[in-house]
Length: 329
Image (cartoon, rainbow, N blue to C red):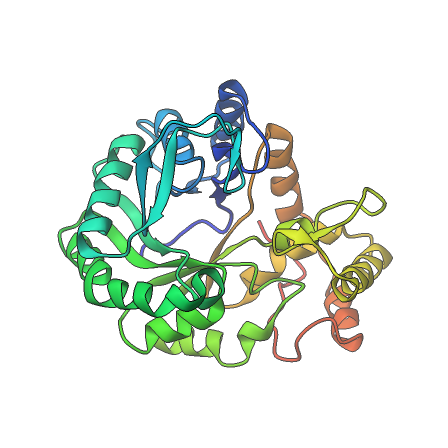
């Protein structure tokens, strides 16, 4: 897999995730990321039901940047007056339908290329497989992927239309399950290896290193828990209001970071990159100000005693690699 920049752009927000983003604002945030040197953009058909891909395709035309998108859902045209569907507001008039079959993957990929205005993508990911997502339907979807969709992705890679293939998921267990059956290049794993959550160190990340599988860390702020300011209302974790245990852990992390004069968000954004399996972190960005924040956090020097204090307080896994004391530019 080609080397990715350490900081990438998560494209769900410009697909109107949870809040409408006007076309002018979406273009402004993408342009701000490009101007700041961001050179990797992740998207998916599901993000605004084609809206994120379309906006990125227009803004990235002629740009030499890495792009990843996803397969596993067909977009079926519908008529609807609902403003919010599946978490996306004022999105395009399509309904996402799970389809991990060979034909479904090929159709989804062709549609993505058209929206993106590209003839290839750097990374293609099977989106949202997993038992937590699909419940009793998981086995059927995994079978469709292993017997159909995976072979389509391999063909696309072999033909040069895709640089690397993998999964884009919120669940670690399904990544392990997939590795039991097939070879993959990369996992975009959202929220499962962060300053708040490090159980991936117990077997999964070592296995990825052994298999030469790279990790892209999505959701480095755990749905906002590691970036939302204190006192601003309930913090969120896993796309929902956080429970008391998570709230207490976040407050402990914030307290230790504050003692060293470091924003919690800076430690959260830099931490995953210290692991040798991690290729990139891709926070969501919805405004030029959020782009500027992400750049500043990536460049914030973090003193070694901060990581030591987190480990002493049991907030950091004993085996977790930590960034060096220089700024993680």
